[in-house]
Length: 466
Image (cartoon, rainbow, N blue to C red; front, side, top):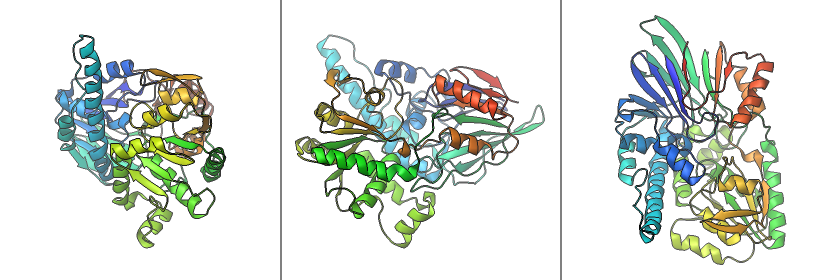
């Protein structure tokens, strides 16, 4: 078996790992790179593989940096099965269509500008039609259900606890020519214990070779138990100033988690009676998918939602905005309000309009609740750069920036070490989905913890297994 790392190698986004075994090619994830627009465009169009020769895709979860390249793969000739959990398949129904819509709109916007300059038009990375075709190739599989991906390759999904439907991928491999049997696993994105809504990550069966994320390999998160108190503090001090709280948030999981905490704070009268908006059609659609997959909920959420018939994702002051006119009306809001909007890294979507209209007002707060990849607008705001560009225009960052690591859906260093300690038979670890400096520091931690064979592959690197 050979594995080649084609994305999320010494960087965080664009997860793509190619396995070649028994004459078949299996792709683990096919995500989009997110970063500077020009760099992202170049990386997302360079596949470094023949799409028509890929036999199957195994998808860990629905986040766009893991799933968003699938329509481009299909556009370029891939016609095989895409295996995922049922919840991931249902989320992708919305996520991939939304991504395709953004690709088409971005191309339309740039073509209007190019036309004025007499330059050649650009094509979207893929179209809505490509996304529709991609969705027809999905096959949903339940957790802990073994299925054959290719001759000699049997796969099982285990709950990764990261977002709804996220999966750890476990493969049992039999190389016929060498008469070899071994196990291989891919974490996708590993979640944390004790987060609300979802179940904790499930333990993996015995595993010889592990490809694992290390987004926060050199970081420790604040306790999720402190998240409500931190959120309460940010909201109350901003409301006292008469400002708005802008929360750039991923439409899947992070939005639902924040709504869950806001619900508690509002019910307990710990925050002012102020309007709360989820300004994202995708978030509204995704929340409906959550309601259809209680099998992914932890015990507390399951009891609230199923047994007590309470909706943890909707309450009195919360409004979901779907159409553009409702979104634009938020620009005229006066007084305290909370606006949750995509995209999570502030690279596109409605959050850009809210930032443009509110970033220069010191009464307001921008709350960072998730990972911000290098060179994204979200990272620049997190770093509190004094001037940032929005829609190509410079804006002064005068709003307060509040960073809340407690909401992160990624395992931190201690979570990762604890998780690995329960894997039996582990021989080799490959570190992906982490910036290079994080990986180097985490490798040292792993070596000190007794894991001697640890590799941080670069993009394009290939390794023989075993």
